Image 1 (cartoon, helix red, strand yellow):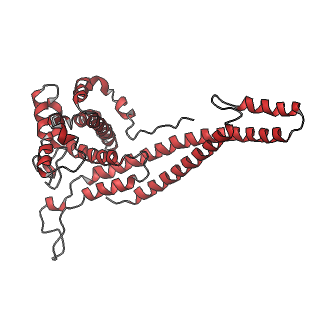
Image 2 (tube, rainbow, N blue to C red):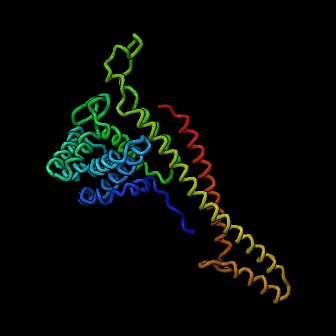
Image 3 (cartoon, rainbow, N blue to C red):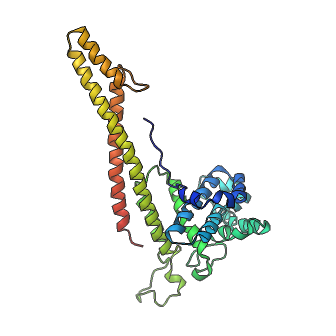
Length: 315
């Protein structure tokens, strides 16, 4: 039985906005990006759209923010492949070059009348509330809301992609990293509190409200994954019942002494067989189905446990 695939970034919400018509030109720009960057851009846009919905943004802003997210890494077109695709950690000099993708993307958008309205995506997605981001080192009130949303979506997808999650099991570890992004990057001195520090010093890099909203998106995703997996388990369960019946027929066939009786149970087995299954191999396939059933049941249990863990996290 073919294993169903789960997509972290289901685009149902995008389709509901009929973005194909409004974004055709903008999305064509992504065709020139490398495969990894393009996929990342699509993921960040899908997640940004969902974050906007959960944040109760209006339709116009959601569409705008989603397109900004699609284009947020367009400046990587101008980053040398040796740096962009380097598997090892970048040197300080290489990182400075990588950081220019924000301003390069902004300049590219500003030169194109169709891209100009969405130039905020490339420019602001690496800015941080506490002023530690780039390219301008802006602080909270100076960073547009779309930039704050895209930053969280970008950070999340970068970690998820790096760790190559096939399921949401263990995803709470990723969320813990994002929680740390909301905390102040400085610690108070012996005098005790942060009250004497600047407002920026009291902030983390990411907006805690948006990170908290991401938790809701992830929990709903896990619920959807559980539903998908449970449907697969239910289908496996029906097949296992069928195999059990074939097993009973085979046992009776082996015990039968008369040829007519043996053929009766043999025909019963054949009636229950599906394409690819034979009288000779159904025992092996039966064991594979049982193993798949037990594996998926364990995944469901772990996913429920993951939801409990995420609900205990505090932002």
